Image (cartoon, rainbow, N blue to C red; front, top):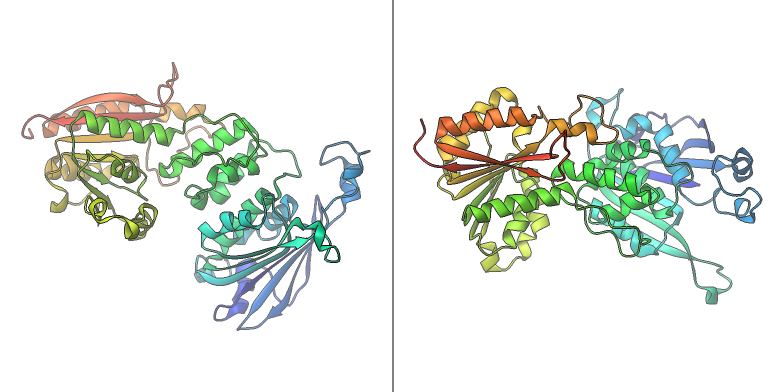
Length: 467
């Protein structure tokens, strides 16, 4: 198996620092599936290429019975394992380039996270579904994809194409992101894991691909293939991914095997609950404060009863992604006039957000440092003073029911805290009393008799001037 990665950035040979592999050395790594070699066919300031060559012993794999199946079967001895990129190459990437995959560069830390002009070449990549599947998986991640299926036999064109593609990816992105794309998607394209899939694979997937997989249009298909169609693991991964950005997994790819449908994702239930509360409150002019990449905004735009919609977030880059995902540049004029995106903060007063029918804080408060919560309260309930405020936040008591979560762990790395039901009720009641609101609570998601719902929801309704 062969994979090459080329940088054409200024001082291109700095790639060696990022990969923790010196361009002047050929290195060997013993793996459970064979031997990996790392070397540099070229290394200049203008162009630097690293090659990862994985030598697989397919007979040894069968004798070791590491990969299951009937050792007497001819398919165990006549196969593509030594030649075509698969989960074995993904394992080699994780072992050989582990530090780079984590975004570490000890020798030159200033290089970490810097986008580089990169070219990745995999000359033999299995692709169930043809070359279009390669494009569908990599293009949304910022790659320009050149994928050409190889013929079964160049001398016999009537036999048609094989399922193996010669793939070249070109893009400008940080090295750790590029490696994470390859680590996750190589076995997805192969459609098979060459080792036993356990709950640890869910953690690997979230840890390695969570930052980009949550927004991928083929997310469900990727998760299903990566986890070898193990329904319980797929459901767990989709739920945890949805928790990362409040976005719902897309429908399972119809080209996949007909697995039973996964339960409705919590993020979908949450958005549905918020929209229902806004309708009940009679809100027409709504602010989604901390809108992220626009998952709730998309729901609001689909309902014509919401006549004015504002999405506000502190991060300009996130607002750009929201604009892209909502396709504002291609939206009709009447629809475009209904929505505005603003850079703003939940902890600073903003006159542009005052006087609306409702403000939504969906999975926002837990991202605020506890000492800054009084600023949020004054900003939203004291200054903006909408007719209604809808707040959702994780229920910390429910975390014990998520497989693989350590005791005391938070659902997202950016969460500053997560409240129990009693803590959320105490906070909401105090805020309502201080600012002239009443508050009502509702569960979101499947109720557990002991832990309660996975998400807590509170609706604040303005009744009077603040105390």
